[in-house]
Length: 414
Ligand code: GLU
Image (cartoon, rainbow, N blue to C red; front, top):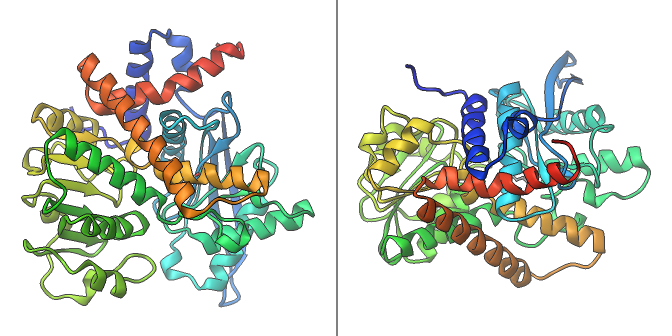
């Protein structure tokens, strides 16, 4: 049978397995197998050349039994309805794993911001908010950054919402610039969370972070901060990549130099002649491999060739179900996306709490709270995985889905 590369259907399979193991019946799976609400919108934008282009956007709200839904908005040419559904379900799992009072959501617009001017991106950001405004809000559904969206885009979106709402609504969206009510530490939160998972996984496998050989696929928000944190921790980052290629140096790359030269979309390899492919990068001999780019990177094709001891998923969905099985059978410790990348939404939650109370925390306070959430989550998932003798992904799904399932049951939905 061909490998299932559809994120939505492969997520459903694991959710069903997790619910079965937790003792829920088919009715619970029927409720949780797809989002409660899925909005598709068309957004007309007058482009810089004067012509109108109509963009398609989505917002998927998986389940709001626990509380308002939460999740990022991506601007990417490959956004699809199925991807939105899967990503909204993963947000439910992430919020459950780090124990936040939210359900999951996700949004996206089919577009390529790399080919658009700032003016066009601003119009699209505002147009998207107008299109989904009835559907979202600080106590309903709270957007945030995701692939190719950033704090500037969040600022435009918040401004548009505030204009419609006629009052200042910082809690409408997270990942904002600090001066508009953003939280200290939000920009690096995903990478911080991944770093904590890498360090914990390294302890479990007896790997000393000093001198550990790390390979990171992707040099966007998560990948670039992570490279910095890893090299600051004394690890040797021997490989990094972007969408166009990868760099490899067995003695360790000069991360500060690369960070200095990357553009805002994380592109840096185009400046070099001696590059390798992303495929070769994944198969490098290393201790820790962090896929921090896009989906379906480790599949049944290359899972046998992975030479890392630990794989920590900073991207959403980089490893297929079959590859998860192969890696686990080979004794590789796989820390799944829904756990490893939960640092972003955790600090988004802190941002929303600070907006609601109007009192702001220092970076140390934020980091301390994030650290506690991530360590508890890692230990929880690791314990379920070892005591039940199941892979870390299934364990994470069990931990992640439980709160929403319980809340849905108490509400009498199932
Ligand atoms: N887009 C991020 C994620 O996938 C963050 C979501 C948020 O902060 O709400 O986890």
